Image (cartoon, rainbow, N blue to C red; front, side, top):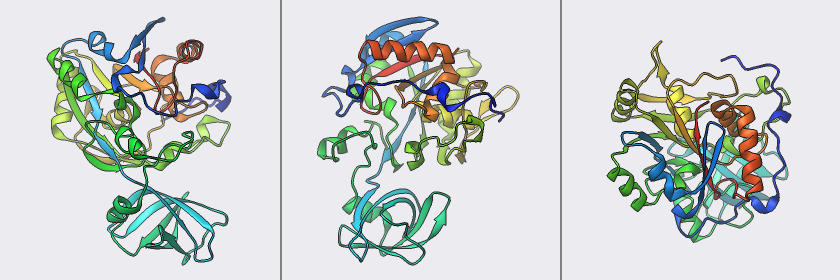
Length: 345
């Protein structure tokens, strides 16, 4: 896809007061605020109002990925501290991971996590290290890993995060970050939405560690997205394509659902293809959306690829106005923050 060569990183910057970064989730998932953006009208609502903002026969598409305990704390044999964030399990005992250490370990370096899990560095793949564990990686993470909270959360993960940094419909383990737009849905709200004849579909996109990586180039066209695994089951593809053929609205619950659907779009009259794949789709202003009509999403970091995506979806000037309004009205930002419902420009 061609990216506007005139776009610069500074075009997606804004000043955010630190106190607006939500550090804890609200006790009630539905109690978050919801900014409804339609044309140039902004409505300040509660998230529970979404059942009145959606139409009967709308199709809500959820990402059912489940966050794994991907963060491991440990040391080198010399005693130096090591932190690993497992990105992807390649084989039962082999994984890709980001490492944070005082000195970059080379092939053959040994690492010890939680004093009982041993791993050896086998090499590199781009920004990731290939680690060979002495046991099943999934078991090691389940028994010794921690919830991988985003870097802007300033407290260590605790039992409440284990529950709340997970959607109520999470089903398929593999993500190292939550699809945060879905965190606002309670089981009761899903029941109420079903009572309004709103249809649901579920796909999977395993959010990778690269979602936390900053854009390090000034010219947007030079940025390369990290790759993430996704799968669209046949029932979900059928539901999406049927809704589109009938002129009904397809509502992406989160940017991950949107990226999966847009990545799977095919044909001159685009339809979503069922199946699994990898996507490195980079959506910036000028992208022509093929599937999604409405986007439910949280507020994103300055200079992030997700801010570029929502700017592409709703319009650069409109998103600037949206974020200025949200800051003025003291909305809560990022993973544990509030949400917005955007209509496509």
